[in-house]
Length: 285
Ligand code: PAF
Image (tube, rainbow, N blue to C red):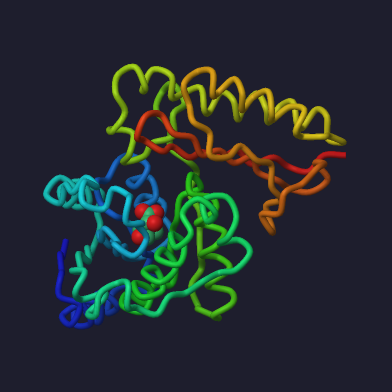
């Protein structure tokens, strides 16, 4: 496995890789890898002849009050896991390489609509940062395929829209959310949870499942009659709920009946830790 931090040297390594790989799949990450990332890597390996992974904690997607400085960085463990997973090349660029004049001064890519709802409302520049770095990484790596997790469903939809709008010749594939045995979606931020917070955290997934079943059973709505009590129950259990919302999958518009494919999205904080999850619901009726 080749590890390259110098983006100028990357091109030579990619040319060598392309000599024997017809299709290259790419998995961008911020490191601190868990089984969720490794499932995406396995999916990438099954879909292509070579796999490239990037590890870059992207300053542009963190707001000033967020956890950029404390975000867990575990490069040695990450490289061991990627080596074991059969990855061909790992890119670990520096912030100076990606943003020579600093991320605040950098041109941003904004996906309107999809990027303004849900997490985009609570974290106004977050998805601009995600899109900008993903675009730059795509330019550096030139993959045929890129794989993103469904846990970050809004991110996945936004990346797909960016790729479509900008005409990038990359097949965006999605991988299912990986979960702990009790249903909690795997996330690097789970390790911030205290023991008591970790014990209540699975309620998020249980709420999505029970609301999902009730919403599908009563497609004519209104969804608020199911969602509002569920939000209150989460608050009573100790969550601070940023949103629990039923949105149309294609547009992320709020919906008041289940006559199109939807997803129920949740973001909620336990103490200082913000957790997100979602469940996709097929149109009924
Ligand atoms: O999902 C993530 O880990 C990040 O948002 C990504 C896509 C690697 C961009 O920094």
